[in-house]
Picture (cartoon, rainbow, N blue to C red):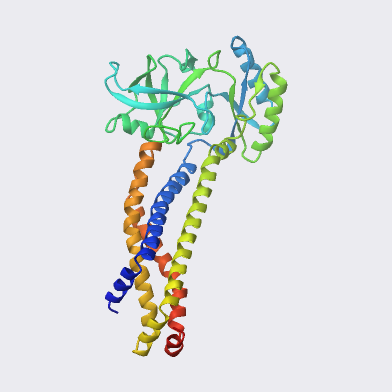
Length: 404
């Protein structure tokens, strides 16, 4: 079929063509960016924590006198260990998906010339690293005599465990074991490399990767008290956590139980990503509504044009055009309109992405989202125009010419 009649018809109906093309352009731009945001949120929600989430929970106490921290820790840890089903209790400063930990910049030299980045420090008491279930790839866990008192935020000159991601970032072609990093007016010696350990609040500003975290062994004391990691059989954990919260209230009446943070790691994950799930649902609803509106616009325009061209359709049929020819005419016409909209939409998609990058510091939209969005709109356009085009093709030539 010659394309000239299609182009002539589009020039004759410029306003309607432009309106539908702009609607498709907006749909393309929003579709690409919304799908990109959804993919990012879904990826964030499935981040690998590196700990045995199904077997871990935390109890947090606050409002106590720091001078009584050692006594509080001794009472609470002894009481929690007595709860039926508890396999271990240890002091921790932070856990994945909980409150923020100690965050600081690190350097790879004493002079502070080689900046390594900003990382999260997990301050952990005796047994906490093993209880977490983090997987050691090389090196060793801290020895009992390497747990030292916290001064301000972390112990001075402590041995540390770092993630594999950090090891490759700091020393790409070297063995990280025995290396030294400097931060917070002290230095740390790397004694082990772990597979994964996400920062406590992934997606909240970590520089490069969710695994930018360091484990620092420390002895509980006035600067490090009130938060405890419990390990239990996954099947028993919900019951253990209920009993542990009750026990903590009885053991430490001089402290306040933080119910918001006294949860299983799985519950903390669910709570942490609640906003992401809501946002994902809203974006999906926006996409569905926008595509539905676009499809209705195409159907309405095609139906209007069919009604306006009944005589033209009848003449073409009388001159030998088949139903397939009429159907193809409307499909080609719609394909051209959708293509114009997609071309404009691709430019608009990148413009929206640049604005989001500047305002919300989002990453750049990958180019492969554009052909996916284009394909979706091409398919939508052909499906939307199909019913009006089939109605047009089904009209007998005589009826079409008489009704005009």
